[in-house]
Image (cartoon, rainbow, N blue to C red; front, top):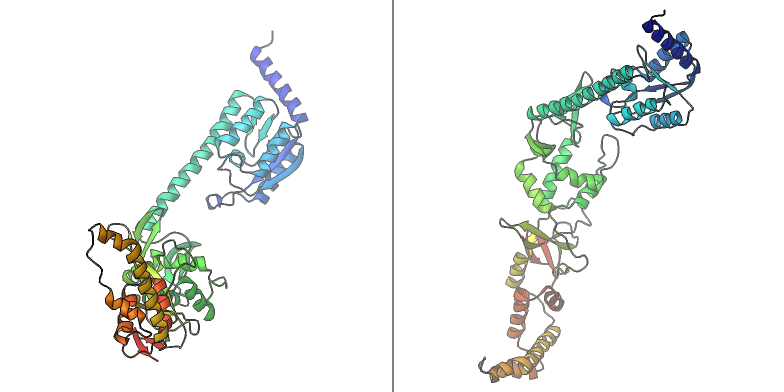
Length: 454
């Protein structure tokens, strides 16, 4: 009588031999492009070793497929996905690969392989040292080995994050150094960060130009292009990168990483005071284009370079929410990008213009027309609104005999004309100021925040 154990083993060997004879293998070789698999065999080495094994074991390798792609994420490898599809359609019935972790480092892809085995479409997975067929023990071992690869993957991710945090706490920002700095490499690793002797001083000037001279990002770009400034790759600095540079606290000796602010050991390229001042200059709330009126732009020219004067609104964030608005006039730098003419506030400019009111030449005819139009508007207001309020007893009588007499005169008195001009300059709207400034025939220059008669 035959031993039942012997019969089972004999039957198993017969079935295994039958399977081996009809297996059509696809040799799959993979190497991740990421740094966590630098020590894994190259694709060429994997293919060479497995082809020699196939020749030794008399295996039929129908095709060789390779790819350089991480196996961390399920369904992300195009070559592997194509292999799975071909197995489902019956083109291949076996996979030849260097190790189980070449096939899967995630639960999703592992589940697809096991499902194919359960459906008897994938009959065998053969590695350099192991064979996995459609039986419970070998499938279980395959799942353990691939799960172990996933565990190692996850632990590497945690270790990398922990290492990056430790490096940040030591004062060194991980990754490529920003503009103006350079990475110092040792043993193919970034050890510390040093100042780029060529570009570092230029970055410092960028902050000073914005903070002290009010340069905008576009003005900085024009200046950089003029002096031929380029990145390490020989490219001109884009406007977006200029703004990113000016807003990066790294240049003050601090840096952000994963939402945390750290104190760095690298040399700063600007002070915190200059950096904060630059941020205020760069703060631009949403604006309505082509609707801003700056009436004093045409009144004067730059006293340093002779260029035109322009203006812009600056907003300062208040302590308890909201913004305060100020208008600044300065050289447009259309002639000289490096013009150092400082800013002047609209309030100071108006004060100096009023101080010179007795020395300026005025077109009195135009001014008289403006005053008369204003008086006529007042009469209309009185007739339609104020008189009704007087009748109701809400107002005393409006005495305007003097205004009426002035309206009838062909020419207004110089005193009244200049008083009206001062009133509009102090209390008028931007539109009223722009209109009234057309009567001033004197030209001014703006130099060192002083308004002088040209």
